[in-house]
Image (cartoon, rainbow over all chains, first blue to last red; front, side):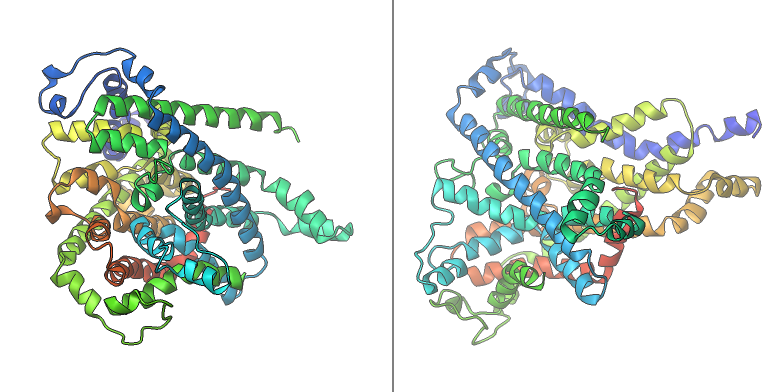
Length: 298
Length: 258
C-alpha cells in the first residue's frame, strides 16, 4: 500500500474504537481516579449537592475502617465465602464438565443446558425462589428434612448456617459458566493424546490424572483467577437474600461498601472500603500469577 | 448426570408449580406438589396491582440499548484486531485493565459523575455506563484476528470504504461470535438489576429485576405472587437459551478461550 492510501485510512482505526474506548474511559478509568480522591474526603449526601462542604480528611477513613467491627466482620465473612466457595465451585464444575464431555447425543446436550441454566438466571428471581425453599416454616427443604425424621434447619436465621446457605446457592448458580469454559478446553484436547495413552495401557484414572488434568492447566488457572475475583466481590446473594443479616453474619465487603455508599450516603467512607477490596483483589491475583510462573516449566 | 441435573432443576420446577397455586395453597403444610386449583390470578395481579407492564417496557429498552453497545464493542474489537495505529497496545491494555476493577469501586464515582451530568433517574443514566464491555471487546478482537487480511485488502482494492467493509464483509463473517455475544448481551440486559436500582429513584424507570425485588419486600408473605414474578422473569431466558444454547459452547471454544 502506498503512503497516501495509508494516510487516508489512518483515521478509521480511531473512529472504530472511539465509542467503546471513550465510554470505558468515562465510566471505568476516570471513576477509579475519582474514587481514589473521594476516599480521602468526608463526602456524603450534602457534599454531593454542594462540593464546598467536602473536606479532605487524609487517611481517617482507612483508619476508621480497620476499627469498624462491621467491616472486620465483612472481611472475615468474605474470607469464609472464598475459602469454602471457590474450591467447591471449581471441583463441581470440573466434575460436571468431565461427565458431560463423554457424550454428544441429545441427552448430553440437554443436560449441558440444564447445568448452565442457573448461571444465566436472574439473581433476584433466584433469591425469591431460594428464599421460599429456605423458608423455615413453609419451605420445601425443611419439609423434606422433617419427612426424613430430621429436624428443621434455620437456613437463614443463624449467622454461620446462613453463610453456608448462601454458599450452596452461589455454587448452584456458579457451576454453569465455569463448566462451559472447562468443556471448551476439554474439546480442544487432541484425541491422539488419549489414543496414545490407551495404547500404553493406561486406565481411566491414570488418563484423567496424567493426561486430562495437566492439559487443563490453563483453563483451571483461568477459572481459578476469575472465580476468586468474583467471590471476593460476593454481593448479590447476601444483598437480596439476607441484607447482610442475621447479626451481620452474611455481610460481605462488597455489601458493606454498597450499604455505606447508597444506604447511608457515606461516599468517602465507602470509597475507602472499595479501595481496600481492590487492594485485596490485586494482591490475590498477583499471588496466583506468581504461583503459576513457578510451574510453567513442567 | 441426569440425577444431578434434576436436582439442579428442583428450584425451577418448584417456582413454576407454585406460581400457579392460589395464595392459600402455597402456605399449606405439608406442601402440595402440583397445584390443586391451578390459577393464573398471580400473573394477572402482576400487571394489574403492580406495574410489571412498565417494568417490562423498561427492560426491553435496556436490552435494545445494550445491542447498540454490542455494535460498539464489535467495532472496537475490529479496530484493535485489524489496524495498526499509534497507541494501539497501550489503549488495548487500558481496555483490558478495566476488567480487573471491581464494580464496587466505580459504582460511587459513576453515580457522582452522572449526578453532575444531571443523568440520575433517567433512562440514559441507566444505559450509558453499561454499553462498553471490556470482555466483549476482547472476545471480538480474538475472533477478528482470525479473519484473513487478504480478504480486507481485496475489498479495499475493489474500492470499498472502511465502513462498507466492516458492515458488509466483517459482520457477516463474524456471525458466530455475534450470536454468542448477542445471547450474553440479551441475558445481561434482561437481568440488569443493581445499576438501575441505584440510579432510578422513580418506579416508572424500574426494570423487571428491580420490580421483582420490590415485590419481594412488599409482599413478603405472598409466595405465590413472588413465584409468578420470578417465573415471568425466568421463562423468557429459558426459552431463548434452549433455542441458542449450542452457539454458547461453540462460541467459547471458537474464541480461543481455553
